[in-house]
Image (cartoon, rainbow, N blue to C red; front, side, top):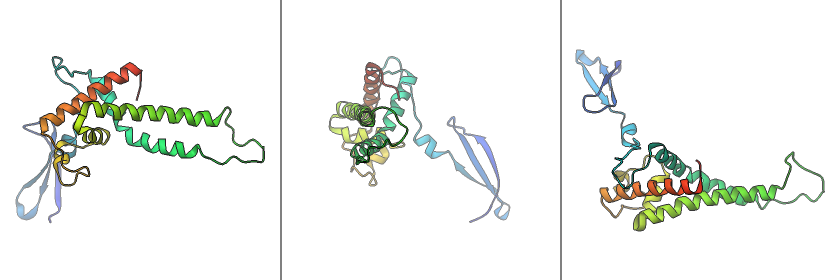
Length: 190
């Protein structure tokens, strides 16, 4: 492996992404290593469809639904933690503890209710949009960077996705469309 002598940025010829090139000084030859920032390109979020598409959603509504869905794993974790914290032992000494006013049990119950509502919203939307692909749609939309290529590979923990690329992306678009509409109806914010 040779040491890199210098780095330079060049615009890519075929895409809008920049290309990073490194020159190596091995035996006077110039060799170029090209990275097209694969991770960025592979997980690029295209927030806009044509307005004539029946699944068209405003760019900001789509991004709101996208980021709302990405919070799903965190909400699941918080929900189990919240339910677990509801079973705290009561200190029988009768002395007040902590500085919070009000009813801690109702606060825990309200937080659990909001979390459960958000979780149910995402899961039910995945069931409606995905039909037989609901598991894959839920997994792909709630985890960043999950592509069709990943879902067809051997590393996918759900197994190989049982549909073609176009159907998968159509179902995923339907998921974000329905989620943004349902969030709008419920006046949910991420």
